[in-house]
Length: 114
Length: 113
Image 1 (cartoon, rainbow over the protein chains, first blue to last red):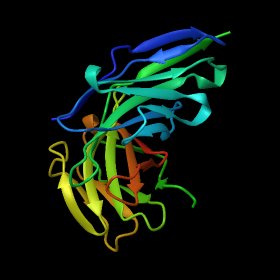
Image 2 (image 1 turned 135 degrees about the horizontal axis):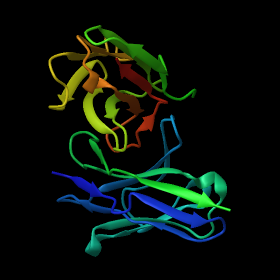
Image 3 (image 1 turned 30 degrees about the vertical axis):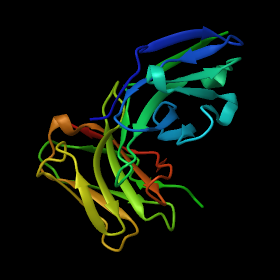
């Protein structure tokens, strides 16, 4: 069964500092990988996705993620965090089978301090 | 493209009552998903439709839950005899194809008193 681990429940960074959110997945074949962001009381917005090809993926709002098959990781990065980035971030893995069943991690809550 | 919409956005009900939520996917998206998200957790898959056919149901979807997508467009999720443990955010997502991204609606937050 596919699964996702986000080891950091809560992260605090200063505005302007760099950010890396960790994500490890478990899936038997080549996975589909996603990062979503959720602001309080809102639905999920897709930041970026990896299906195949270049392992460094660029997303919206200046985010990027790197797929490392050997480490089963798909970490999210941003070089300089803005106060508006404060939200909860979810890593997710989708199967490449009959339909796109997506399994989410438990999320990492990002706090940005001035 | 107006995005995925859900109605209502919030619902407060008393234990034992029935509730129904509606999801309108992005037009021409033939795949529709329901998820449930409890506090401090990521969304958990509940069920999946391809057009009007319900093709997969999670074990989380007890017999008190039923979902329909009668004409392959909007979908409804009904919970009968609600319990306090049903309190959660119910999210709907749609996609246009198997390998395509799922786009999420804003969710319906249910509180069962």
